[in-house]
Amino acid sequence: MITTEDQNALFRLISSYLKNDIICYAFGGNAMMYYGYKSATKDIDLIFERREDAAEFVRAIISLGYKKMSAVQVYPEELSKESGKPEMYTRGDERFDIFVGSVFRTKLSEGMKKRFYARHDYISDKFTLTVFVLGKEDIIFLKSITRRERDFGDIIVIVKSESKIDWDIIIEEAISQSKQGDSWAIVDLEEAMQRLKEISFIPKRHFEKLYRK
Image 1 (tube, rainbow, N blue to C red):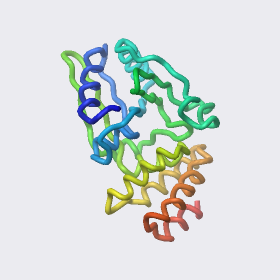
Image 2: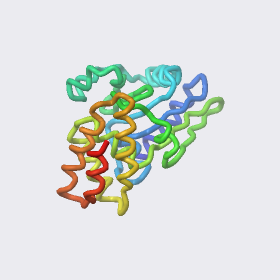
Image 3: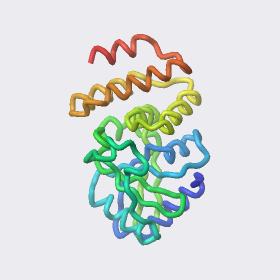
Image 4: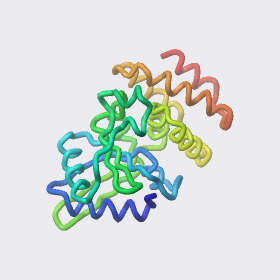
């Protein structure tokens, strides 16, 4: 397991192996640690805008002993066949899930990038690894599309931890993604919201807005 302190130390170490500055976005359990929702995680989920940045990050972690593994071992079979599936690298019980441009069918949108929660710069002697932490609403949305029970469990943690979740942001993002070709965005989000009704009040108007798509 990787703690918040471990993650910060690991990112600083990775920055010392870089040959240029790179930027990425955190959205998984590792992002939740920046909020304080979690104290540890097994996997570090990162989205890179540029394939070159992802390749440089992968080169650095391979230098640290991480080995490539198959997505089939972690994600549902139908998702592991998607073009937007992650490259995954593991060392011991630690794992990096590296996405480029999208999380499966769901694109890293301009809205997501603008709504970031925090920025962390891990600076070595020469180069910097910049990690933007996505907003809680976007984390909820992205975790709703993976169809994994552990990700739904993370959504529950966020919803129970926060007094206010802006469901309009989440629904508008799902609708926008649907218009861009992610035909499952609305379906997956609706399923997650229906399940969440058992533990949290979600006003009817949000479901109506989703259905009006």
